[in-house]
Length: 75
Image 1 (cartoon, helix red, strand yellow):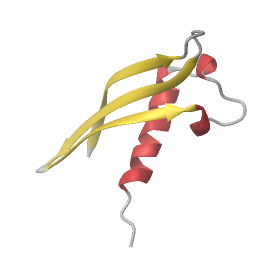
Image 2 (cartoon, rainbow, N blue to C red):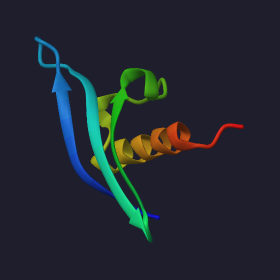
Image 3 (cartoon, rainbow, N blue to C red):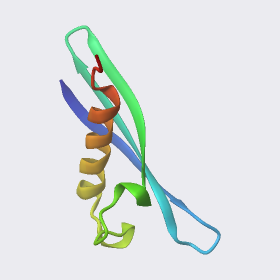
């Protein structure tokens, strides 16, 4: 399924620090489709990563990994 990023939204605290980034993802494959908003938070980052040193592509990669994990079939 081809999943595309449709928007990124940065969320800030009262001091202007990024608290999370919401990534909207959308995809369709045949009769299947998905629309998801994934919140990338500080807990999703490695110890060397900060929101200030990540590109939009990096954040999207993290969001896609979260989506894959959230939608994985558990038996």
